[in-house]
Amino acid sequence: MSKIKDYALSDRGRLAYVWAKDHMRILTHSISLLAKSKPLKGITLGVCLQITKETSVLLVGAKELGAKVVACSGNPLTTQDDIAAFLVSKGIEVFAWSGQTKSEHDWCQNKVLSYKPDIITDDGGDLNTKAHFDRKFRLLKIIGGTEETTTGINRYLAMQNKGKLRYPIIAVNNAKTKTLFDNKYGTGQSTIDGYLRAMNLLFASKRTVVCGYGYLGKGVAQKCAGMGSKVIVTEVDPIKALEAHMDGFYVMPMSQAAKIGDIFITCTGMTDVIQKQHLLSMKNGAIVGNVGHFDVEIDSKFLLNQTVRQVRPNLDECILPNGKKIYLVSKGRVANLIASEGHPPEVMALSFSNQLYSILYVLKNHKKMKNLIYDVPKQIDNQVATDALNSMSVKIDRLSKKQIAYQENW
Ligand SMILES: NC(=O)c1ccc[n+]([C@@H]2O[C@H](COP(=O)([O-])OP(=O)(O)OC[C@H]3O[C@@H](n4cnc5c(N)ncnc54)[C@H](O)[C@@H]3O)[C@@H](O)[C@H]2O)c1
Image 1: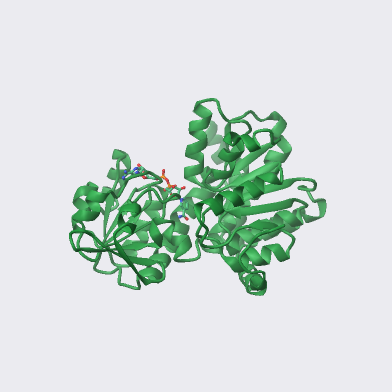
Image 2: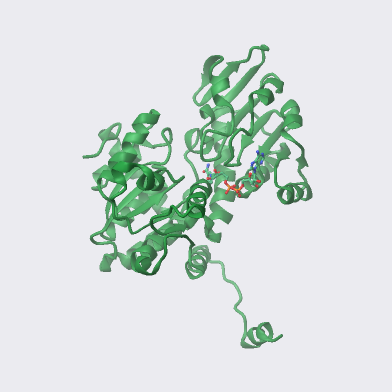
């Protein structure tokens, strides 16, 4: 029996679902081609994804393909309650609502695992790690998993290195048609959207500090520059730092950037990126927020322990002992999902097509797979790119026989 905030929101959720579905044609087309054969019949799919309108297209699709779907949210604050209500109306079990406490969030994950899923589709690794290490769930017979984000994969890599993985997991995040578009363009746009809704101030003329120049950082830096900001990048990887420098951004350590930045956006997946001493050295009025997976990048605990006043939805004013006011977006949690609605549907159609094909791949191939992390097969990645190009009516050239022969000749 599901637990959500308000079942009456289902009609509003349906509208949002239809809007997303209409802009995720490559995913819905694949679902309609497979629907007759019901390839997921008899399978329970345990899901821990952000409960957004785009996710609802994947989950309703999985149900149409025959799966029993049980879902919780990848984050305590990000659930869109109308979508949760709509999903329940479609026969999906949902344990998610906005504004959960940590223990409520944990309870919801336990509920999903109590349905004994065959396959787990995760975002950040909470459900898969719980299935591995929580004694209550160690006897579950899970045949495999799929993972949506960089942080989840980093956690499984640590488990794999210690020989602790108990079933194969497909790193959906690492598909080119995921990271190059979702992490870069999706987060780039939705971060601007989230910050704008939270602060409604100009990006133009401001010094915006982007921490991390990986897939997310590149997208966020590009979009902030497009909005007229003077972008500063902080990094720990010399190659990424050089790339940022060559791309035309200022590069410097956080201790320096902290003193001159107006807006800060952490995009690293790492802990302790903006520390107490950085916060104390910031200019009065600086705005800080995070779009990495967990709320560990900024010392939000220190900020939220000061004199705090909520000045706008998703924006807290924190008065530091030195008298300066620092503004924290979405309590240091994924700002693009909390202050905004997350990635646009067109980009999620790419990510979730990879998810769907990877779930089907696990189902078909799990007996041959080892307890390791697998990349999304290249064929799937290319198929998703081809489908996306076709949906946008973009045509490309094909190698001629002569060109193939040239390529194969040493
Ligand atoms: N908010 C979203 O919608 C969303 C979407 C996709 C991924 N994510 C999450 O965002 C995070 C980043 O993902 P990614 O794909 O860009 O990862 P990535 O590995 O490509 O990039 C992270 C970058 O941060 C740098 N870094 C690490 N520690 C640092 C530090 N102390 N200071 C400065 N830079 C540092 C790394 O060198 C790397 O270049 C992950 O937690 C991922 O799960 C969030």
